Image (cartoon, rainbow, N blue to C red; front, top):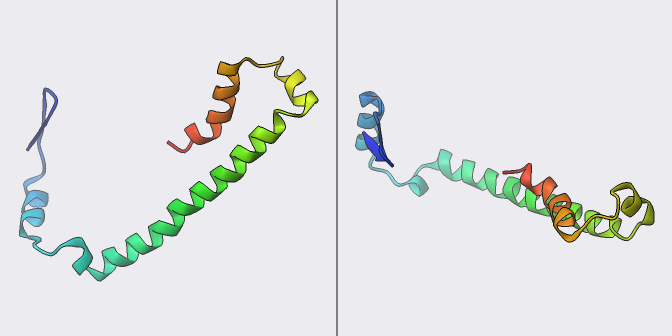
Length: 90
């Protein structure tokens, strides 16, 4: 059972017993080490593509047709337009 805020959340006792009996750290388990090693490139891949997207969005702001299409956006709107692709990853 865990209390988060004002609500009480109950955990299945079978799951609680399994967690209690598990005394090994994550780095002592080969399957979890492999999983984390696989996840590192995946997380970095997201960052690499975000860098490409941000440079593309910044360069598009110099194109007259883009500025005209978005009706000469203000600073706030430009910030929102540039943040939209990364907000989708949240």
